Length: 460
Image (tube, rainbow, N blue to C red; front, side, top):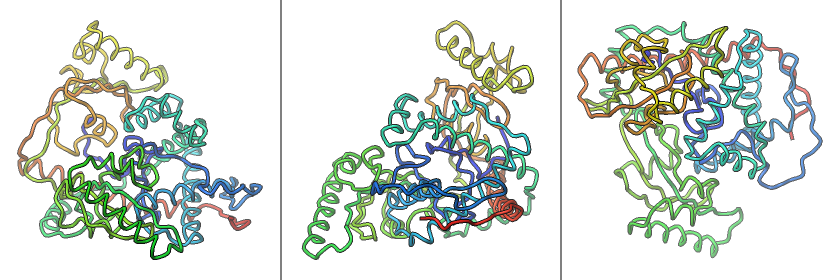
C-alpha cells in the first residue's frame, strides 16, 4: 500500500528483532536493538548465577513487574551494549532505565487491552516468520536456536504478541496527531542541505572484538593487542571479514552475524566507532581501537548520507493482493487464503493479475494489483521492508500491515532520477517520521503519568 503517513515507529518484526521496535531511543534512554543473528526477548544471565526467589519490584495499576522479569530484560540490554562495543553504564543506572521502560510498556499494554486492541495467532505467526526470514533461517531453525539459548518459544511468541499490541495502539493514538505543512518541508530541505548532523549519516559497520578482561596485566594486554592487530592485517590483506569475525571475535553473536551490527544512523553507534571510520570508504578497515570492552577492528560495510535522498534512487515496481479482515474473514483466514493464492501462482495454476482483479480489496485491483514504480518511503515500513527483501519475480509470504493482509510480488527494479516533486514527497515522509517520534515521546510520557505506579522491593 502506498502511504504518506510512513513513520519511524516501524515494525521491529521486519528488522530481524524479536518485537516491534516502535520506541524511539531518545524516549527510552536506551540504545535500540541491533541485528545480531537471532535477537532475543530474554536470555539467561551470562554468569549462570543461581536465581533468587522471585518477588514483585513494581506494581503498575494492578499488574506486577517481577525481579526475574527485570533481570531478563537487563541481561538483554547488557548483551546489546557489549555487542555494539559501548561502555556499560553502572548496573544500578541501567537497571533503573530498564525498569522505567518496563513500566511504560506495561501501562501501554493495559491501555491497548482496555481499548479492545487484539493480536490473533495469525499475526503472531506472521511476525515469527518475518523474524526467521530476516535472519535467513526457517521458523523451525529459529525455534531451535531460541531453545538452545534457553528461551522458551512460548515466551518469544508472547513478546511478539505484546509488541504487536503496542504497535497497533501507537498507530491509532498517534497517526491523527501529526500534520506536515509545506513550510515544514521547506525547512527540512534547507536543514539537510547544510547539515553535518550524525543523524543524517547512515552506517553499516562490522567489527571484531578482542575482549580485555578486568585487571589484565601489561603482558597479557600486549598479547591481546597483538591478536587484534593480526586480525586487522588479515582483513586488510583481503581475507573475508565475516569469516574472521566468526573465528576471532569475542563479541556475542559474532559467530552468527559475522560481526555485522547493521545499518543505522551514525548517532546510534558508539562515538568510538564513528570516529574510527569517519575517513574510510565502503570496504575500509579501521585502525585497532580500544574501548571499555577491549580492542576493536572495524569494517565499513556501507556508508551513505541519510535524510533527503540524492537525485538518483532505486525504484521498485511491485503488485499486490489486499484482503481486509472483517467479521466474516479473520486475519488468520486471510493469510491462509493468500498463502493458497501464492502456492497456486507458483505452480502455474493461477495468474496473479487475474486473482488481484477478482479478490483484491485495494484500488489497484482493477489494474491486476499493479502499484507502478515507487520511490523509497512510499510504502508503510512493513510493506517496504518486504518489497526490499524480494528478488525480481519473487512472491513473499503474506504479511500484515495496518491496511490488512497483503500478497506481494516484486516485478522489477531500476535506477531513476527524482523530480523536484518526488523529492518533496520523500521529504514529507521523513518529516512525518520525525514528528511521530516527537509525538510518541510526549504520548508515552502522558500514559506513564496517568498510571498508578507502586514501587515495592528494590531489584537484585
